Amino acid sequence: MTELSGARVLVTGAASGLGRRMALEIAARGAALSLWDLDQRGLEEVVTEIAARGGRASSVVCDVSDRAAVYEAADSVGAIDVLINNAGVVSGQSVLEISDERIEKGFAVNTLSLFWMIKAFLPGMIERDRGHIVTIASAAGLIGVPKLTDYCASKFAAVGLDESLRAELSTRAPGVRTTVVCPYYIDTGMFEGVRTRFSFLLPILKEERVVQKTVRAIERDRPRLYMPGMVYSIALLRMLPVSWFDAIARIMGITVSMDKFVGRKTRSL
Image (cartoon, rainbow, N blue to C red):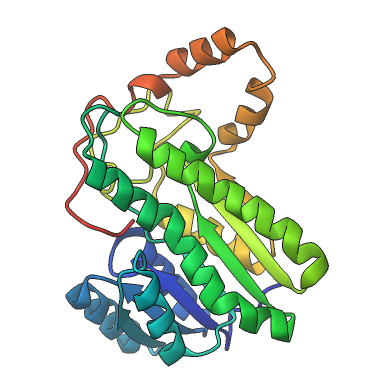
C-alpha cells in the first residue's frame, strides 16, 4: 500500500483541471506536494488554496517537454515518493489538418516528458526500493479515435511505457510501484464539446469522481485503472475481426465523439 500521509508527491499539469483537483485531494491526505506547470498564476492559486486548507505545497514553473528544464527543476526539488505524470495537451484535428509543430508538441508533452520525469526521479526510488510512478494516460491510449490521431498515438505510447516500466521494476526494484490510469472523456474542459451516444455505458466522467478513484488506486497500488468499466472490454473486442471491431466502435459512437469538439486554451489536463 502507498501511504500518502507524509509522502512527498509531485504532480505535473497541476495548475488546472484534473491536476489541480488531484493536488487538493492528495494534500487533504497529509502529503507534501510539489506542483509543476507552465501556468504560474494557476499554480500560485492552487498552492494558496492548499495552504488555506492547512496543507503543504510548493510550485515549480517548468515545461515538462523540455528535458534540460526538467532535470534542472528536479535537482531543486530533491527526492520524491510519488510521481504523478498528469500534464497533457490535445489538438482535436484530423491527421491532415494538424500542423507538424502541434504533432511534435503533443508527443513532447504527452509522451517524451514521461521519460524525462521518470529518469529524473526514478533513480532515487530505486535506491530506496520505494516509490510510486503514476501515468495519467487515456482510454484513447487503448482505441483509435478520429481527430485524435496524434493524441491516441501519444497515449498508446504512454500505456506501453507504463507496462514496460512495470516489467523492468518487478525484478530491479519491486518496491517501486506503477499505476496507469485510462479514463474516457472527463468534464475538465480539455475535451469540451465531445459527445457520447450511450451515456449509461460510456458517460462523460466527472472530474471529482475520477480523482477519487485515481487516488484510491494509488493508495492500493493498483497497476491499472480504466474508467468507466466498459473500457476494460476493449481488450476483448480486439479478439474480433477488425471489421467487427470497427463496427462496434461506430455503433457505440466512439468514431463520432469528437465531431463537435471545441476544447479549451490550456496546456494542462
